[in-house]
Length: 223
Ligand SMILES: *Cc1c(COP(=O)(O)O)cnc(C)c1O
Image: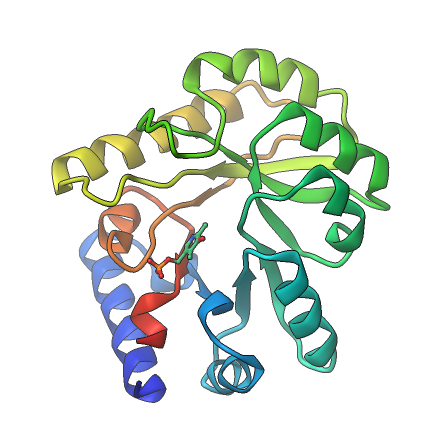
């Protein structure tokens, strides 16, 4: 692995894709998903200028969070979170990308000491193996979340199937943005809905073409 080269390639590619899509590269926040690597490599990518770090396991998050407390990092928790583990991390993270059940929302409301920036995870493709609310559930979900002052819905998060072709990717990411705009128009008090968390190593280009503001990238950096 040549981390310096990989990082330069990803940054350059994102900047190019953004410009081609008529977007400003600064509007795309790049999260390095460090679940594949140890503390040393995580420190190296931070030294290369990456400010957003994402983890999907509570134990790994906590060990890196504690070891890197001197760095100015924006911490993202991107994986599904068990209810009983909410209290261990919820007041440490800056963004939670996987709000995927109302039971989880209730627990966050109970444990959070300040409003937590959350992405509503939506399973747009309908793949059974994927977490997230279905599009049909969203109205009901919003009606409950509106009562929770410790949850701020900053955007929609979605994942596309591994084998989706570019047409399917476009469909999924476009739908995520449309859902975001429809809900944003309702101007609900704890739901700014300014952001879209979508795009991983294999599909971030299509995600950026469809207005992603947070891309979550692991493999392209760390392999
Ligand atoms: C692992 C992971 C990623 C990064 O995936 P890559 O394909 O390695 O870029 C992004 N999002 C989530 C939720 C993940 O678990």
